[in-house]
Image 1 (cartoon, chains in turn orange, purple):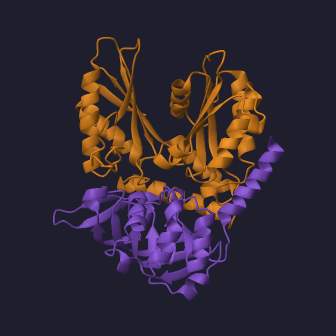
Image 2 (image 1 turned 90 degrees about the horizontal axis):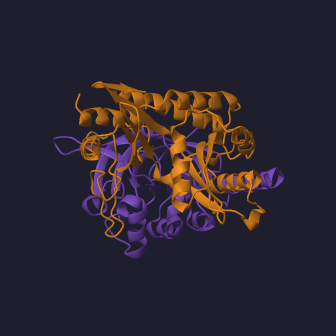
Length: 288
Length: 191
């Protein structure tokens, strides 16, 4: 398979076939909700839809998101080769209805019709020491992206100071503000520290973790566990209908901050948590 | 489960209450941000007959065109309705719309408009794109496709047993208001 075709297949999988860890998490949430509640009904519909999308190879959600690629490649590889293949794959994926055309020029409001635009698809390149190429894609929906937010601590309205307790407070606030608007139950990616840009970047890349995967930093792992429990007490529930499951998981990571700044970036991923990975090694393609 | 056929009378719509599960059948129209802006600013006539006593669907579908030129819906769940809050009550009253399907609910201005002009907010399951596309039996017409692009165009579609839940009714009832107030109270205890 050539590079463009293997990336096309990666996009098809991301859009139509929800990863196992997410499906399991949604099934558990269905079992956990009480019989006869709207929340249970929502999960039933979600699970039916996920299965149907996989069978028919059609998008789980019509908002197939912004295309975000993360590529790790060995020394000596050309970035251009990958960006060209990605563009061609995105165009073909749009023609095959794996993707909705989602690249709009903000000045003219014109939709390009093929998912190609300035910085669309967006590609993060990273060179690494392995002799293989890893291509990861995330389809990031617009509704959930709109409820993402960034706080700077201290945040006086919540008496949130510059410590993990302050971080905890603003995360709870963000989820209450989001209600069902980001297609709850969401998964949160949190970046602590860094600057305005890197805090969001760190929050987004957390979405490549598997549901249930805790941070290697014990203090952060503790906060993740606490927030998983706390946020699910808010009774916002799936779609904001009320219920026991408001988030599927919370992934937090930290990085160095400037002495004067303390940012907390919160990215919200809808329940249709779409991301896939492929690895190219010795001419072979391996999908996760 | 309540089955409703579109066009819907004002009396039937006013009998609905928050929490009612409904299966909608008949002709509805998709409209998102560009369409709402247009309906408020220019009040176009071409869409009037399709909206009267009908339902607006906040949706930007994935569509397919056959070789003979016919359109069909591939994936078509609801989009976030909150973006239409500035426009919705004006559109509902101007075009005599009986219902709005979307996700996430809407605010006080819309709730007031639903009461005043006799309409409800139907919540569909966000993200259930393939499943809902299955309820779309036919694409009858499309307006502004070239100008607005696929997601933002007005798609006039025929649906059968489209599953929704009433989360805002014409009597000032709103599940979204209830859940928000409750979760804010719980948050105060948790902080």
